[in-house]
Image (cartoon, rainbow, N blue to C red; front, top):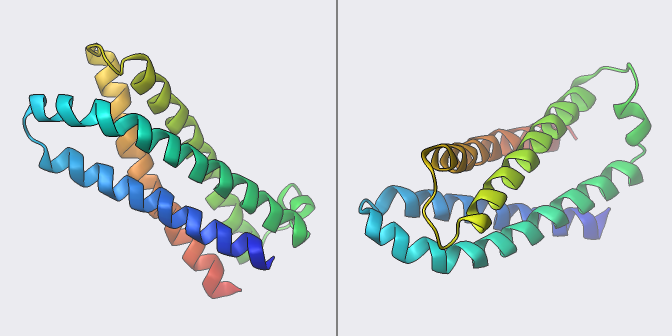
Length: 148
């Protein structure tokens, strides 16, 4: 598990750190023309970087789960603090993946064109959801670490 946990933690830092940066950027850029100048330039770079970090997180998470013999237990009726926390974390990760796909599709399709009100709502809502759920996943990662 040694390499997987290290790569998982570095990817989590990149994933969550990037989300913090983009959140702060979105909050500090008040003028729409500033956002239009910045996001089309850094958005694609950030998107690819974050996609790689997310894929690494998913792969290393799967490796750690299987290497520790937890895959069968996750799909069983067994319930304890570790398994329940891991299940909750994985459910939230699944939601984050869906929100990320929604956000990426809208952002890439409308990179150089105006978004509709619905697209803006979905893009910003999914982005905020990802940001908040990242903090919840981080909480459950710390809970699991404390237990183990």
